[in-house]
Length: 632
Image 1 (tube, rainbow, N blue to C red):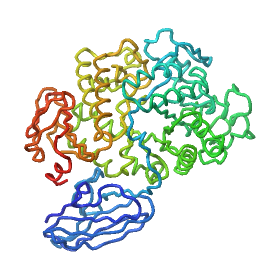
Image 2: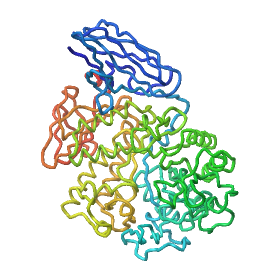
Image 3: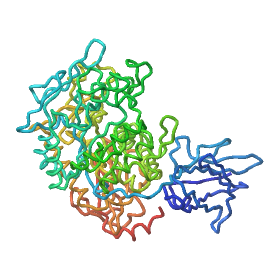
C-alpha cells in the first residue's frame, strides 16, 4: 500500500497556497494497491466528497474543484480502501501542511486559505526596512524639556539599566524614565538613513502614566514627556523628506485606569466610568460589581478592558470624522500596529481598517499575532485577519522563534524550512511578503542575550539587571546575530530592527530588553555589518520581491533561493560552530555566481560555507533557464 500527497508541491496541489475566493484548484495523489480514493472537503460545517480519478500519469489520481465564493478556511483530506480496511490521509500531526501521512481515523486536514483580494498591501510597506523604537529609550532631544507624571523617576545617567521600582504587592510604585522623546528621534533620522530604514514603528506615544504607554490615559494627546502634536507632525514631515514613514502603536483592547475615560483616581476633569454610571464612558467597560470589580487585561487592574463593540467607543476610535485613527493619520502617520490583535473582535478590526483606508488609501494595518495568523483561534473563534478586510500584515513571531531555535541548535534546518513553508502556504502572498520579520522586540529577551546562550529563568530581577554576557558568550552571540540578521534581510517579508540590536544591546525580558540606545558606545563592527546587509537587501530586487524556494540540506545548513524576473540569489547559512559545509545541488552543476558579500566569482557545483558563516550568491544564469533544470 502506498499513498502520497504533498500540499507544498505543485505536482499535488495547483495552484500553491492561499487563493482568491472562487478559484479552481486541482488536487492529486500518488497511490497504488488502494481502491475507492475520495477527496473529503469541509467548509463552514458543510462536508462534501469527490471521487479521485486516474490520470495519464502512472499511479496518479486527481480531481479539480471550484472553491467557495466566500472568504474562509477550506479543509480537505482523503479516504481510501486497502486490504479490506478503510484509511484516511491528512496532514501530519503538527498540522503544518506539506507531505501528509496515513491514519485509520479522521486525520488533521490540509488547509486552503480563501481570501477576498479587495485591497492590495502597498509597495512602500512590503519593500521597506522597519526600525522599532521604544521612545523613552532611543534618544534625547537637544532642546525639548518634557514634563512627567508625579509617579515618575527620571534617571540622571542615560546608561543606567532599566529598573522596576516595585511596591510590597509587586506593583510598580514609580516608573523610571530616561528622557528619550520625539525630538531625539528627529535628530537621529539621518543615522537611521544610514541603515536604509524606510519605516519607523513607534511603541505607544500617547499620554499615560507608565514608561511603556500601554495603559493609555488619552488617545488624543502625545505624552508630554515625549512631545506634543506639533512635534509629532514635524517628525512625520522630516521622516518623509528622507523617504521614511511612521507606524503608530494602537492599544485599543484596554485603557489605563488613570485615564480620561476610566478616571479611577480623579486626576482628569470630567466624569470617568469608575466615578459614575452616568459617565459617557461607562458602557465602554465591563464591570462585574461596580465600581471596584471589572474585567482587566490579564488581571492587571491598572488596565481595564474595553468593550470594543460599543458604538460610542468605535465612533471615538475610528468612525467619527475627528476619530483617533483619522486624527493621527492626518497628522502624518502612515499606518497602525494593533496591540493584542487577537483580543480585538473581527468586526472592530474590519471597521478600523475601512476607516483607515478611507482616510489614507495606501496606509497599512499590522496586527500583533504570535502564531500562524491564517488559522488563529481566539476565544473559540477562527479569526478573519487575512480574509481581505482586516490586517495587511502581522508580527512574524513564528519566524523569530524558528530562526533562533535553528541557530541555537534546538532544531534542524528541515524544521525551519517546514515552518516557513507552512506560513508561505497559508498566508495570501501579499501578507506573506508583508510579514513583519522581527528578531527582537520590546516583549522578548534581547536577541544577543538569547544567542549567547544565557538563561534567566532562575535569576532574580537584580541579577538580570546586572547580567552581561561573558566575552566568549558575546563573541558567539555576535557571530550568530550576523547570520540571523543576514537571513532576516534576505528572507521574504519586511525586516524589522529593534532599536539597539544593531549596536550590541543586551538584556533579559521586560524591562531589561528596554535599555537605552548606547550612543557613542556602539559595537562598531556590528553596526557596520547592519549597514552592509541592509544595503545588500535594497540593492537586490530578488531579496525584496522574489519568490522563495527552500532547498533541502544537511541539518546544520539552511539553504534557499530567491527568484525575481531574470535574477536568482542563493542564500546559504551554516550554523555549525566548527564544521565546514559543502553544498551540492544538481540545479547548480556547471553554474557560477557572485558572492554578494565578498564580490568573488565562484563555481556552484560544490559551495563551501565556513563555520558560523553564510553566503549570498547571485547566480549568473538567467533564472528562467535555471528553474527549468529543477522540478519545483
